[in-house]
Image (tube, rainbow, N blue to C red; front, side, top):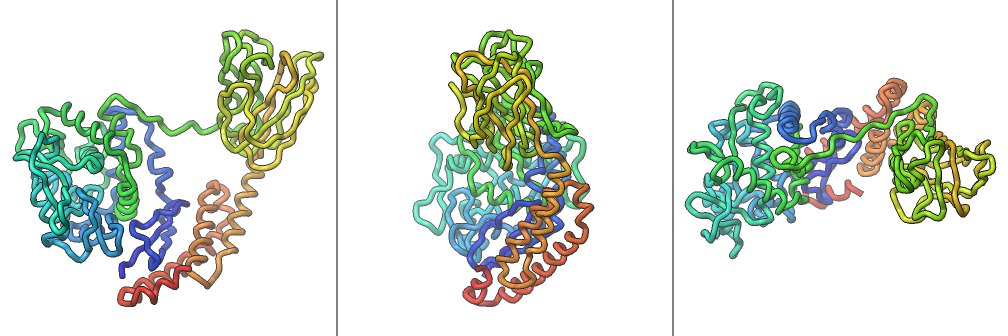
Length: 535
């Protein structure tokens, strides 16, 4: 029976590549409080080009904490690339299952260097880049030998290359210089090649600042996509770098990221500490090597001390007749269908294509109240308030989604809707006919003290709910819930729950001791003897 460990990584569950009913799960709390997929790219600020390439180089080299040995890769690949059946690996080029036990034999599998070591400019053999799990894939032994160290490219005609051990299964086509994988593998190849180029080029070659911590037997140097006339350089058959990049970008688009890549990216991340950015965001390739760009991390809403935002005509950027215009106030943003040339107030008309104002970004915390004041003393009009936990956008007429908070008559003195629940978006809809003129809209949301108290209480409750014994699955789920709630706390709040954190640490340690015991004793046990542990 195969032993599979499932780990928590900062509040989200990294699913083991081959989870079966017999799997035992294990929590590593140290990981849960450090790097996570959610914040892994938090320091990336560039939107494209050499600047983005350099930032990604620095990131994936500095977080690459473990470089496996070539021997270790054999064991790791059994988990990172498991097939659809128990105790199998998935062949890279054909996606056929091969028994894990059939290693290094015809019809069996071995370790494929997607970027052959003979084309690496001497940067790797069977260590460093030559044993990087984001690079090494299981390949049927005879198919791998047929591919040999041929460069990738497009083959006109060519000879089909078959996988031994199964009937008439083609893994690609080749001629004397080039190997062309099947269309559903070309994207995988491109993203691995982009990763290797970004990682193992020296920082100065790709606009980075560091090659990360020094590791023995790991080399950085100069990598090219095409050979440039050098026998031991370049992994793509192309006339020059431009042509090679063009082909790789085409393959990246032709074959989008699939679940196989996502699953093994998570598994390799757990082992090595770094990720393949071109799998996490396939737009990175076009942003760096093509004409595209990526959106940098979103702006953090500005939290005002009083927990409110006041919207006036000054909040808009409007200069033309009626239409949708964007507004911004107190760290939140939205849109409204107003008369753009009115500079004293917000003018709406029920006779126009749309007649409302709404938010498109969330308030920092749940909306508690909305107060609205009209501009003219004789302008008492009826308005309806809607709130939602999803953004409002531009629609004809008026939005109807969300919770209806009722209709009120707005006056210059102001009228207030009190809001309960956790909604963070709003829409104010003009219900009366003809025109209406608003002076201010004040949105109030929960203050930081209230949110802090709520989150702290939820964490304490979650810790106290962890059972000291019972089924592993129930202990696993309650520990997961407590870790999620701990990670949601602010740094200041974490300092106030030290006793509860000690209880959580103890619960995790006890759970892991139990899991390790079963994993150790289950290696020689029958499957049925272990399956009852997960209920």
